[in-house]
Image (tube, rainbow, N blue to C red; front, side, top):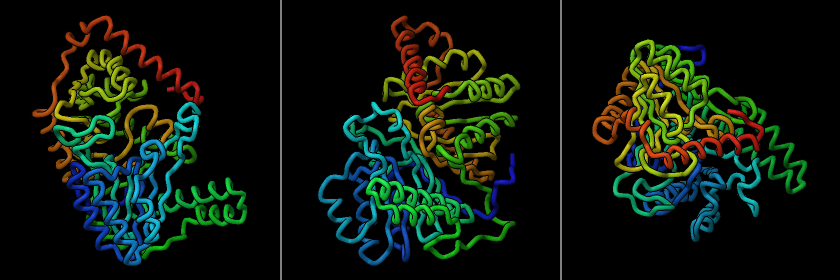
Length: 404
């Protein structure tokens, strides 16, 4: 499963849940001496999220350059007094693509920043699905009885430079777009020049490990310019090459025909295929639309489990006990066709075993396996809602000029 894009020499740490993630992230930010860059879809300062915000402020106060980008749908605004505190110490923070008066009625506004990345001093990176959001809190539903199920990976090694370059380029492109809106053509030209200069960096060169040590890894991005289908291709290749076992956990699962066919083909050639999916109602289109696709998958030999303990938010997979991915990308059209996403793909037995162990535990103790017959016999009303949600998804995609 190796490709020329894999790079050796990585030290990896799998982090499950926001509590563990925040402990590691805050500790690294507290030790930062030069620069911290953070991108997140949601920056919610309720509860544990305040720890991250305060760590960023403290870092900026002691002279560290701090850059934060959050998405305008996930984070419409920051509550007082946090914006004033960030501004006072020089945190550079922006909200990407605020919705404006028409909101999501404008199809172009569906192109969101959904990736969750952080780089500290150019030496450590984080990539995963966890937002800056308390695990025990949901902005819509309030307190949760159990934490979300999600993952992030902490990385040192050559991929860190790629993560930093991607974040740096996005920052300057954003600044260029903002300068254009302000009719500041000189500022826009300067920002675009900085975005295009791949050698431009404000951090020391990353110290890499010897090539015969550490895990193989690669950064896989999805955007609307150069990397339109890399994440879907990475999944398709891994599923197509699987020979023994696939475990895939995904919060919002509305796969294309290509992915569905790859899953069924794997099951029919003897691979055990298990999907760990959202068991709680979250959004109408994702909840019902996903269930409209269950029938063919179950008939093809795919095992489907629905997570019950809390909200599942993970976007991870393990194939044949060696290939693994952790990232922000769901397997749905919003992630694979419209949003900016970031996954790390890893070829390493130890890391795959660690992730597999967490997923096996969730499958056995926190999920319910669906029965094909019971699913087929669900009520007519339920089937109608499922089909309506799937149809609505396709109609909305057509408004963006996409087909899935």
